[in-house]
Image (cartoon, rainbow, N blue to C red; front, side):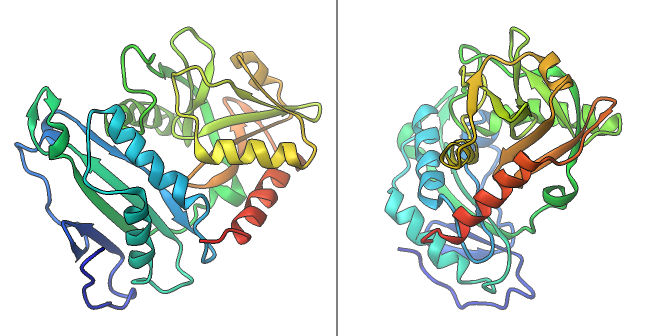
Length: 294
């Protein structure tokens, strides 16, 4: 499907972007001040990974960007199979041992207030992105003063760019006080997730995670980890979670495409250690990745 350009050594090119049938090096200028995705925020995206030569859950990630686009009133002229084919074409531009972040994007090109559905444009960005150190060393978190929105007030079922300024506020608040990220509550004060990752905690051998209530995304890595743990005999309970439960948890960890599975080693003023369930979740996910077809 894509118009392939001459492959260039990944020693000099850290980012390839596909747009309107062409592969471009770096970060091309593709949006202007009248583009709906700029001034009216009709932009959605997704994120997959290539790690150890594998792309776990590639199809679900590519399918979700199309679902997010639909939820935002966008109708891109591209199919799931075409997106996957472009990803497989694009990753060949990089050395096979490099870790990559794979980001399909859809944005509205035209419209006023609501986007014109058929004006939707598709972009695929693939960049060299190493797995963060937090996978091994862990991350710190604090209770955020910012909350996740309700589905009546924001497109929470989509992976929409317009949701991320609030995420950015929570991260800025956390880093400004010496932490890596925040724990965000939902509108009525129950635990939702970390600023940009789903949240799990363990107590007495049982794993708990906030039940999906429409205020945060049901992450693909979240779903995968739940299934892997259950298949391995670990009880995983999805329920309404209070912040106080985190304060007495044996282990806390996050899941998301950025780091897949990583331990939380400090919550507010309390230090934690990566525990056996967190390590098991990491090991199970890596085994799943190694067995992936893509």
